[in-house]
Length: 235
Image (cartoon, rainbow, N blue to C red; front, side, top):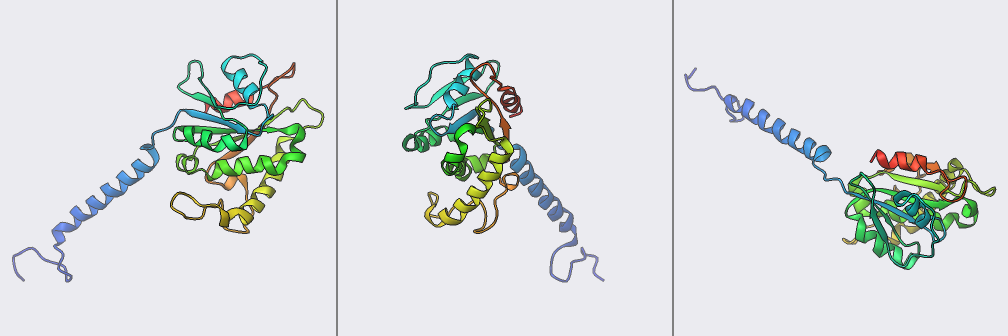
């Protein structure tokens, strides 16, 4: 046998194997670190919902800790929280304004709060679900993998539906929307967008963005937004 370095039958030098393996391990490790730790977190907590859902009142409670007289917002409101790097953004509820305002601030999204009027939810279940659907299909929201919270507002009202009932109803509507709207929705590249394969039942806990729900009331003697504040602190 020759004194020269023994070579494998396919022509690769045995001495190169450790180098190749080490190189592959380094590249793999870099990709993993980049994936889980290299993502820059945004600072915006976006509040969305239908007109009259209580978004602006909730916004005021968080940033000013007081009730205010509100009217339909024609533009977004944005304020940084005290002793926090996060800012809350109240997105207009008007459907014609909501999309552009959301896109303006979603590049720096850290979390999304979908405010639902629990008292008239039965009459507006489809419209409420469409708001959530638009949020979940946002490319910025999906890329950030930020959590999404359903704030089931006005729980002090006798007609209010509970948070669990609202989630169940919205899952049914999301499943229908995902099936009927997929062909009509596309992203900037022209590719179809959907939350799941057509006809698959949508479950909030199985989506790319973690969706949870809490009950609450943001006006009156029964005001309680403590769970919302705790959720924001975890972002």
